[in-house]
Image 1 (cartoon, protein in one colour):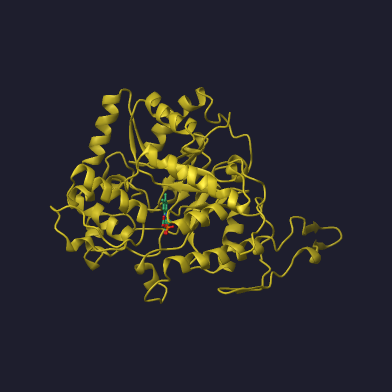
Image 2: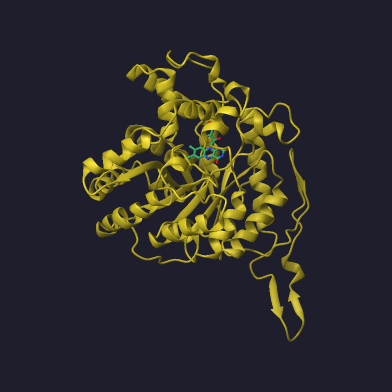
Length: 444
Ligand SMILES: Cc1cc2nc3c(=O)[nH]c(=O)nc-3n(C[C@H](O)[C@H](O)[C@H](O)COP(=O)(O)O)c2cc1C
């Protein structure tokens, strides 16, 4: 039987999906210090996780009331973001096995710069690097890069398609055996094995070659999280891991079947891409204790902090609406899937905008699962066996405690059931994830 894969969800920041993390009394407020992240990496590695992953964005959110005020006041998501590449690097230096995934945008970086950075991380981590490819959906991000209006949705994906192809060429610009390093003869490298890429396209002209030799994985593992039709096709073409936030098991199953069937359209096997839905565990010795932990956490949320983040994710200012009225229908921008869930919850549970804000702040509508280690393992096992996922992304409610509890209580239960590795049996992240060794570049 195949086994499931686990990732830890992180931001290089005071919160992740839960906006209560920074004010939870069990959280250690070390998010500006390397030890905070290194401890998390070591805990997750003790739990044999495949990887730890950092989401990222390139602007301080200010859609709510056209100002960052509420977000700064209550500590919303995105008010602090260290550069996750540097954070991941310090984590890699104190671990040997766990993968490190970092988000980088194809809209505001250049392929050469990005290819070089990830090849470097792959070397420094001995083959544990992953890249979460995002196209950056928010106007605020455009304004930090001298652009008044960012590219429209499909044009961002056009650029991303070419971007990823150029990076693949750059990563191949050094053949694996180009370095000779013969100290006696004085021959450093074989010049015939280091090649210009001479890419000329609609978006980029890049000559290459890279200044970084072929890295242990050849290419970092590609992560993606699109939910539009175009986004899902992009994922089916390129992604080797997909992170998703789906509110219910039924939505997870629909998404899983959809992506797996799209993979064959791009000549790929269903196992070539692992689909990992996100949830927040609350583990207790009894179900009652777990539920108490869950409500304690959820009660820490101010409704405005969630609305602030929903405004940022939807790229829409919700401050213009009455908090005591239901969420209004707005034109879809930003994170469509999550906004649809918020609208559906509003209808089915008769929620006000303030209720939606509270829910959104609790974890961006990712499911929360509260129970004993056995109950949480049951929930995971059922989804895995129903082929609704290939594993999970664990999103914390406090740090590092959520990860410690999950690793100490839930992981042994999964291991006993034969659902998860007891030791790392492989060296690189690509191998942990049972992905094909090298992906060939696909012509755009
Ligand atoms: C679990 C998850 C993590 C994401 N992480 C990021 C991120 O770090 N940075 C970002 O700009 N977008 C992030 N996104 C947004 C996606 O990359 C994508 O832009 C969004 O889902 C909209 O896709 P679509 O335009 O195809 O609908 C994330 C989405 C999900 C579901």
